[in-house]
Length: 308
Image (cartoon, rainbow, N blue to C red):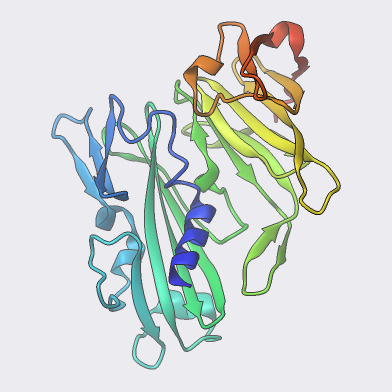
């Protein structure tokens, strides 16, 4: 159950496995790894070779709870024991409002690098029996010299959710996914009922564009283009995908290009650089491997973005 809870934390933060196309190293940053666990960041562009480890980033590692057996400060995540009769941690007591007296507390640190900035995220979860709850999230955005340019704490479902965020190559725009309404599932999980794409100017974090998306979507980045994908499904019990909707947002041109690709056609632009062309994208017929180029200006539905 502890492993499952940590995966819930990672799914919420959307940082560890959702690395940018740069992966774990680019010209300005290198993620320090121990096995598959992120341990910190090397700021390669800084003249002093600045290094920040998880303990420098994640304040929840310093809340004073004892680590459970086999966990050290290099573990990611770290599991701790909480007992309100022994441990007087104001932050946890306040968050729980004294509704739970004992539990296992987990915090994990995740790092996502972009061309000019790093987003580091951390979360605090508590597990008690069959009940678990994500208590609080935090994010810090660093520039190439290791300076914090934006920082926020939020509760699940509230505030700017930087766990889903992407920062474009120019460093001028940040896009993320947002939900405003939720239903609580058994066990304390929050299930989103609506989905929005928000785009901010960066680093001042002024909201410049927002659009409601009909379904859950994944957010991606290619150079200076943010793009999203969501599936169309049949009405069967298996809820099988019958096609995918794609929208590409060029903030500088103030345009959105949208296309629907029915099965067996698909677009692999999140994993394959060769899926992009100078004029648009390369669509693949997954049944026979043949490809066709689709031009943004010729083959897509184009609309002007309505800015805030």
